[in-house]
Image 1 (spheres, rainbow, N blue to C red):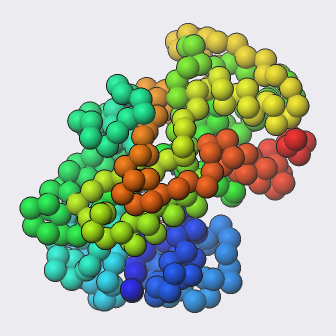
Image 2: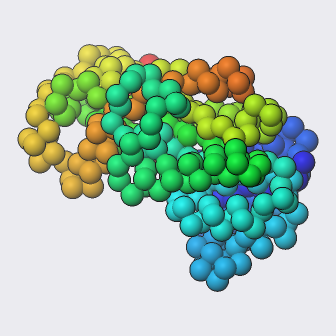
Length: 321
Ligand SMILES: NC(=O)c1ccc[n+]([C@@H]2O[C@H](COP(=O)([O-])OP(=O)(O)OC[C@H]3O[C@@H](n4cnc5c(N)ncnc54)[C@H](OP(=O)(O)O)[C@@H]3O)[C@@H](O)[C@H]2O)c1
C-alpha cells in the first residue's frame, strides 16, 4: 500500500516508517522538515519526504487536498490535536482511502475510575488536549460506524525511547531527578507516591499501528489503548530506577500543596497532569483483536531511554547496573 504518515519524523514515526517499509509498503512521510528521525538513517533513504505545515495549510483550507494529492491507500495521522483538523482531513479523504489511522492519547480518559481502564468506559476527559482528542475519537468512530469512513484510533501511553527524556518518577520531565536517584540524594514524591504512570516504548506504538494496518476488518471503527503490559506507581518507579544505580531510593512523601512548591511551575503542572489522570490502561483489546504484543515493559523502555540520556551526557550519572 501507499501510506502517508503525517508527522512521520517524530517519536512514533522514527519506528513506524521503517516498519512500514520493511513490510513492503511505499511510504510518504509528511512534516515541516524541522527535525530528523531519531535513528534509522539507511531506511529513510527510501522514504519520500513531503514538506508541509499542517497548521498553515489548514488555515488556507488546502491541507486535505494536499494529502489527497499524494494518492494514499492509507493515512496515518500522528499530529492531529483539534476536532476541526480531523474533520477537515476526514472530509477530504472520504471515499478515497482504504484506511485512516489517527493517533489519540490515553488522556481521552479523565481520572482513573477502573484499573486497568478498558476502552469501553465513558470518556470524562479534562484539559483542552484530552477534551479535543476525545472529541476527535468520538467523531472518527461515528464516521466509521455510520458512514463507513475507515477510521481506527490508537491511544498511546507516555511515549518513551532513546533520544528524549521519559516522564520521570515524579511525573514530569526533570531529568535531574534521575541524577538524585543515582547519587542516593533525597527525592520527594507527591502525596502517597501511589499515583500511576503508564509508559509505552515508541517502537511498541509503531507495532500497534502496523498491526492495525494489517488487521483492517478488526481495526476499522475501533479505538485501542497502546501501552506497556503494566503501569507503575511513582514509588515503584523510583525504587526500580534507584536500583539501576545499585541502591534503595531515599524517598520523602509530601502532600501536594507542599510538594508543588519544591519544583518549578512547569514541573508542577506536568506532575499534576500525570497524577490527576493516574493512568493505568488495559491493553487486552489490542492484544485480542490486533495481536499487539508489547516488546517492552515500562521499566525496560524507561531504562533504554535513561541509558541513552546518560551515554549522551544529558543525565550525569554512572552507567546503569
Ligand atoms: N508524547 C507522548 O508521550 C504522547 C502520548 C500519547 C499520545 N501522543 C500522541 O502522539 C502524537 C505525536 O506523535 P509523536 O510523539 O511521534 O510526535 P513528535 O515526536 O512530537 O513528532 C511530531 C512530528 O510531526 C511533525 N510536525 C509537527 N508539527 C507539524 C505541522 N504543523 N505540520 C506538519 N508536521 C508537523 C514533526 O516534524 P517537524 O517538526 O519537522 O514538522 C514530527 O515529524 C500526537 O497525536 C500525540 O497526541 C503522544
